[in-house]
Amino acid sequence: MASLAEELLFQIDRHRCDDGGFSQFGKVSRGTAYGCFLALGAYQELAGTDTAAGLMDGVPSRGGPCPPYILQCLQSLRTADGAYANEPAQACGMTSATAAACIVLRQMNQPTPSGVADWLLARREQGGFLASPAAPIPDLLSTATALHALAGMGVPTATMAESVSTFVTSLLCEDGGFRGNWLERNSDCEYTFYALLALGTVSLRPA
Image 1 (spheres, helix red, strand yellow):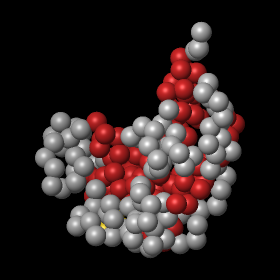
Image 2 (tube, one colour):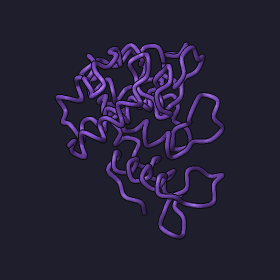
Image 3 (tube, helix red, strand yellow):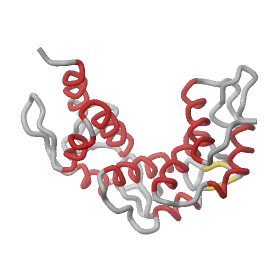
């Protein structure tokens, strides 16, 4: 009888795509940067870092050998502006997808492509980070994931502490939670997590 961890890994493996990556939408033809990030994190928690690193070469499952090339999946998601998206052949990258790809590469001991850190830093706006070059205002998801990825690449984030704190605190709601951006009214658990991640990355607490 399979253990809970083995069963969970089997279910996660069902999200492995034809290109060797993973998708949060199930088994489809192409993986996403976010899907690869989630799968790798789950493998690390459930099977240990050594098994998770095996994703690079293909991890055996109860259904037989898995397609390899998770790194090739990420490479296919590079955008014309040097970042990453969740779909191939895109002109502009997305901050959250780029951050996810960078984290996966770092966890698999792979180098981050030149210019990616600068691309993320260029998304800084009004204390937070924009979701894309065309986004009108910053949001908590983009801010937290960008900061987390940049810190992992060795970019000093403490220098952003004051502006990040001001931005994040501006999204604090009366119930103690955080909303995703200035256009939203209500807090939720997901964005509260991103607020704490952002503040933790720059080593600050909300005022």
